[in-house]
Amino acid sequence: MGSSLWGDGYHAPMAASEPLETLLRRAFPDATELVVIDRTGGGDHFQVVVTDARFDGLSLVDQHRLVYDALDGPLQDGTIHELRIKTKGAA
Amino acid sequence: MSELQDRIKTVVENEPVALFMKGTPQFIMCGNSDRALRALRDAGAPVTAVDVLVDPAIRQELSELSGWPTIPQVFIKGELVGGADIVEELAETGELEERLSSALGPEYREQAEERVVSVV
Image (cartoon, chains in turn brown, red):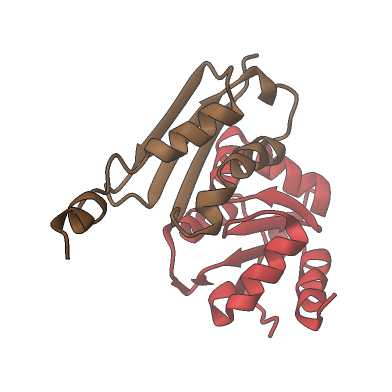
């Protein structure tokens, strides 16, 4: 077995929050604040903060729904075990 | 609609305040469920709790019904209020008490007993 096989994939949890940030950035390209914190360092408990004018006038439920939609992939596949969301409008 | 989803819907629609959580108020199994319950208790809400850990299908059917992917989920008079973050935020601003008061009446604290119901 080639060592590179394990070498590349296995011990590389990488910056666990990177994919989430990419997904959020894609969904909120105009966000003035976009923070992803890996709360436990385990790559599955996250706090995200998004500030975007898109949230203006939306209820908190609808604001959080937009974040959930953006993170649907990692929520469905179990990458995200726990997610804390803080959304803010620009107003 | 499945029978389970029907029973979930009945709880959501008929209980003044429904909290779908991991564990029960006596034995909480998740930090976020704990946060939501505390916020509701602080606001004096009459909480009817449903433990979703009893059967994985509950969570699945509930999310299908509400369109909300995570647990806990809080409903006041059938309306989704949100998860732990939202309930906490609303509690901090005083909006949670306002919503409870307008949905259940200003005397809502007087009927604030806590109970657990099963949907399976």
